[in-house]
Length: 102
Image (cartoon, rainbow, N blue to C red; front, side, top):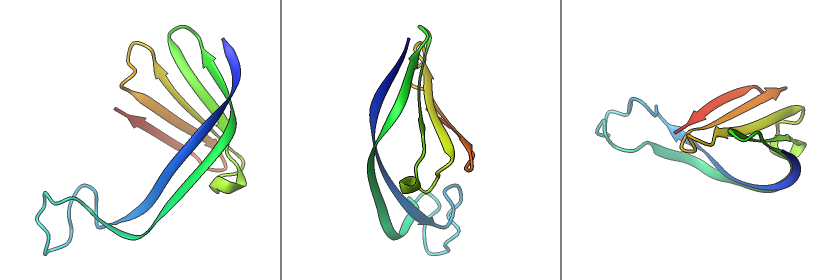
């Protein structure tokens, strides 16, 4: 089943001082959470997307816009219905990204 849908995307982006894997700051214990630096960049947008459900996998894909800073790219978010706790995000075009969330 393929449908056109509207998707609301809400993101918060920020920079982290040091490393997410090793805390390189001498005055901070190794198990301390990373320190945020700079300002949080909050963005909300609604996009036209394609929703595809083949019975085993669900995929939502949309074209990025100038607002997101990734114009010319297409983002796809998908998961297997029998493994909804694992989500993949693929971005192709002018910006390329592959992420797997568990």
